[in-house]
Image 1 (cartoon, rainbow, N blue to C red):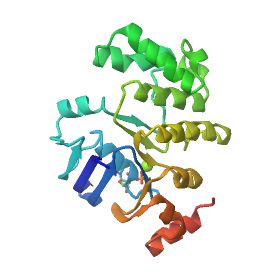
Image 2: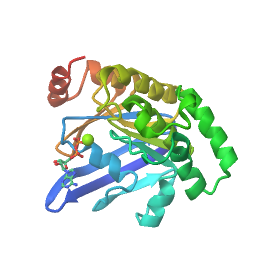
Image 3: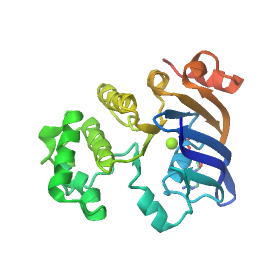
Image 4: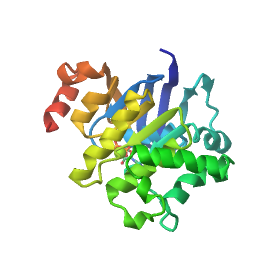
Length: 244
Ligand code: ADP
Ligand code: MG
């Protein structure tokens, strides 16, 4: 399978503190890579480097066959192809669900509003939210807001989706529904990098696991193998500490 993303020797520091060391991995088109590791191991920082929300000091990123020359302009363009959903659904409170979703496609991509709205409705339908198109974020539950955030990212027709602990702040009964949406995306061959603490979900969805600690990738293991036979003692301990 062709690589959609290739990261080589990426290093990142905040001031004097190095938080990512010699990060090398690739993501095959249509595959799912899951980042696991203890809190503070660098998962969010890494994922933020992959869509220009953080600068990095050295190393290279090749996306869709082209080396990324980091600049504001390049990242602005790439963010249309690399969608991201965070733990906190950053919807604009003064805009309706539909207006939130259409902001990117109509303002940035200059798409026709009718056509973009049609796609938005169909995506909302897929996540069971079509009746909320005219609602405001404050009228939605956390799980519903997260569904809208996912739709907003998908509306740009990204080639790669980044998910950073998107269920971490949800009530337990909301978690499953959001994870199911991501599982369905995987089934439809969306290429994704996913940070999660939901181990059963990770096991179900991961083609490859990257296990991070202190900013290093300690192991890269096929998903099915990681959970039964991790390569490092550290990963083994990590799995034991997670209840699932
Ligand atoms: P994770 O997502 O795995 O919990 P993070 O990527 O958030 O880890 O953090 C990795 C390390 O970088 C931690 O030591 C954290 O304290 C540090 N860090 C994260 N963001 C910043 C920042 N904006 N400024 C300084 N240090 C940061
Ligand atoms: Mg994090």
